[in-house]
Length: 396
Image 1 (cartoon, rainbow, N blue to C red):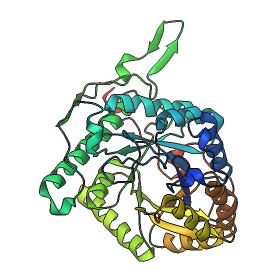
Image 2: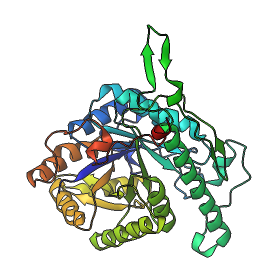
Image 3: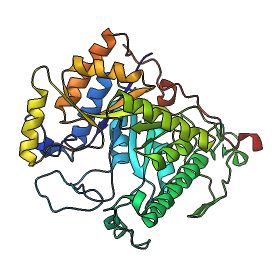
């Protein structure tokens, strides 16, 4: 079985001291050329897609709250706009930006991602993300204060209820957005100069969604995009986000520590799908790993970065240090736990991205486990997902 392979791009890399590493380009982090170079390199390696991180607050070394550190990268560009900027410079690789569900209007996200799918000619995806940090609420002033995240939800029923509400809202956001993507039928545009008819109004549909958090009438202002519905992906670490992924996503990123853990997580995800009564194709499950790749001294390179940062790197995902050959062996071993692919987080950019495309990919190709050319142009098709028909087409 051929592996799917994606890369998660974030700042100078996933190590907090990555911007201080040899070869890093911190002076270019907020330039379009920096991101274009990374995505072009990822496409050179025939990767399925790249993801772009985003948030509604400054990065922080403290989970759930801001910090006062001045020695780490702070600030970022808008992920959807980055993806739109690099789309014309690439032709095959998928582009999957993060956009939040908590403080963002579904209508705006729907037209942004649909526009990206048009600009990229069918290579767009979206990672919806819940933003639960209390400090971010003050940026918008439309919600009551959020509870602090300094305790375990399993031991705090009030916090657990709050998170359930946020994930419930997120599921509604995805549902609204999918309906808006369907609200134009594929042939709604006539563009007949002779008759003066640009669209067939009967093929634009009100979605008339009404839920606990908002109501949206529709239709979208953006015609149906090449994929019909761009790919929806989500990151999940536990039961609640597994439930969300089962209801709302096409792809889920998980964070196993080893092969046995990967098998257990796959089982949990499939159980969540069954409990949700999922009728869509099964979730494509990707495992996340933070990677430091070198032919000789990856562990030493990471250790030097740890020293610069003043602490050993901590991550929600497994941290791998080693050679491309060793990483290829690990991925092939974990694949047998039921994983469809992997989303790799380069420790340092561009170094570890190039090590993936020029070191890891040839190893996987030699094992017959990775493509030697792109076979499809659209992102859904690359993952074996059919283009969905508009749910409203039968009503015409």
